[in-house]
Amino acid sequence: MRTFVVLLAICASASPAVVLDRVAVVVNQHVIKSSDIDRAVRLTDFLNNERVANNAAEKKKAADRLIDQEVIRTEVATGRYSRPPEKDAEALLAQIRRERFGGSETRLKQALGQYGITEDELRAQLLWQLTVLRFINERFRPGVLISDDEIRNYYEQHRSSFRGTLESASSAIRTSLEGEQINQQFETWLQGARGRATIEYKQEAFL
Image 1: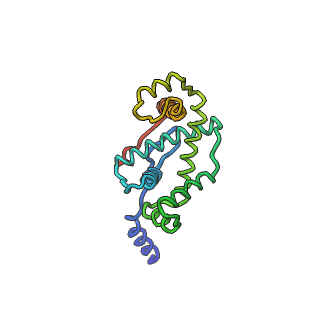
Image 2: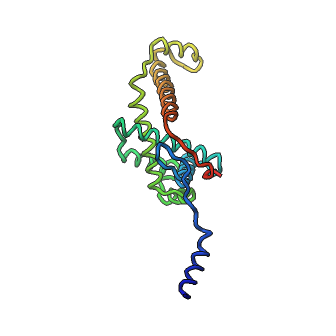
């Protein structure tokens, strides 16, 4: 009997520290939990070199990003798009370590600890960002065609921004216009894909 009473006392004293990992959003039967949103906020703030702002508004933004992520992940899987190698994520991680922390692994780990994330979580996030970029390039770039007239018109409209001739600026203008069209096509596709998805928010998870 005494052992049972002691166990009850331990459980009672521990119960206030228990944090429930709530279901926050369901996307096409895929569950996004509160912990997923919290991690997404912290990763984004770390990458943007900003203080963690884990309030309701930021949680909602992070949830929307995770919804987009799930929609894209499904498309990548069903469309059999290529994936970037893990070494590319390692290269990005090395760049962050070098540019923000002077190449110090210790300083990087200290900063990650302050944000409550691990190096593996950061590495996975970098790999995912590269995956999205590769998907966008493979999915939408083939349909983009910039004419010489479009390049000429852009040059004439922004002539003061260029020091050289149309010929010397045409390559940069083409790249810029291609990027704009790719982004527009991607955003249009993403809005449509989200509209076709079944999304259910659990509002209590955002309080």
